[in-house]
Length: 147
Image (cartoon, rainbow, N blue to C red; front, side):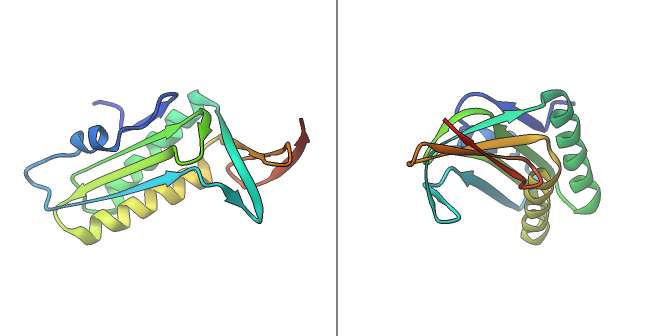
């Protein structure tokens, strides 16, 4: 079976990712794109750096995908998470789900992104306009660093 959770150091192409989910038994498709925004908690963000522990993230990501298949009536699911340096507006994470019915697709998509954000060993470092930066892990614990 092909991987359904992927890590990528190159930009995510949502159209290409959606093609992996096309199936004649699917009547609906839901997706989520997490974009790098230019602010967080009142601070102006200029870029993000994502770091990941790939061996663990890939195993846990596939576990989340398998759970979504078990919990919801879906046809297919896929998730891609970026790592490395990302600019404002870049897609940091993409989730897509196809299902016979929209309700299952929406529910599974929400489940996957929520679990990925909570459980995977992926940390982001937010860089701010004032030159400071903060590391944030999957539990949202921050450590301020001065460049």
